[in-house]
Amino acid sequence: MKSPEGGLSLIVRSGDYESVHYALALASAALAVNRPAVLFFTMNALRALTGPPPGLAGWGRDALMRERGVGDFETLLQACIELGGRFIVCEMGLRALGIERAELRADIPFTVAGIVTLLEETRPGMHLLTL
Image (cartoon, rainbow, N blue to C red; front, side, top):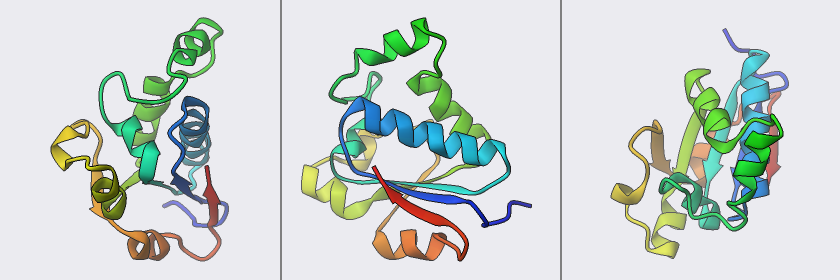
């Protein structure tokens, strides 16, 4: 059973590769040490859940990460999925950007919801961060 102590809720809103990559790295690390991780994708970060490849600024850095032995986007994303990370896609963000649910990757188990759901999922003892 995962303890909420030290768990993370991450608001992922930036549409650049480095921000999304680091959010996945933080979440997968928390999950690896048996802490919960909630990833709330909103605004331009929603583009990370489209593709492949995702529509992120600076996407070319992914090949460099892989070349240097750093976890790449897909590796970190799959780790988050396999370790039980919770993915929430912001309904307001989808509408604001005109992205349809059908445009999002089918291999990511996400819930379309809002900020209230994020706050409910952020249990006492968890850290709420924005990237």
